[in-house]
Image (cartoon, rainbow, N blue to C red; front, top):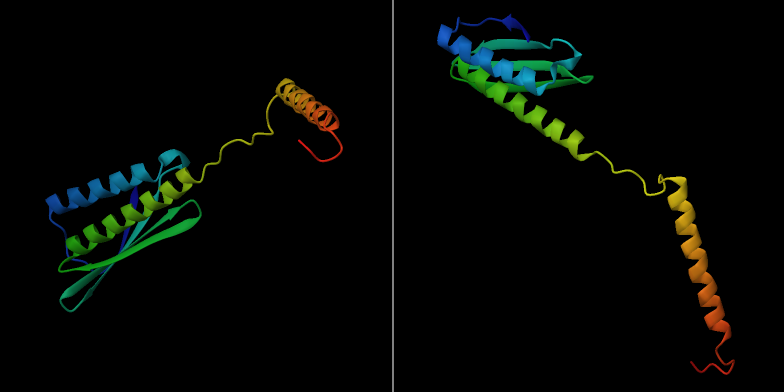
Length: 139
């Protein structure tokens, strides 16, 4: 996953950088890499004693955006990545649950003919049974 950083930021320690890259690798696996390499845009902006991070990823013609704040850049980016992972999981679950089952009318021609023949046989018996009854209304 290609990561583009924008804004003022303090340098992360190597350990923090590895953890962030591992989170982005997990996110790349969730985003399904069949369509090529994904790009993430990370915007960092400090505000007095608070650091804001906003991460944007393009996924199936949609922009997934997560924004978080923390005491330093690492905490803000970590929280934003977790939010983004939850968004991707929710979106994938929606698509997975929206699968539809095949229609019953799309069966083979022989099965349809057999079902029609059974329905026709049953209706003839009902008609014959109705004519055998007395006309005075008794069962």
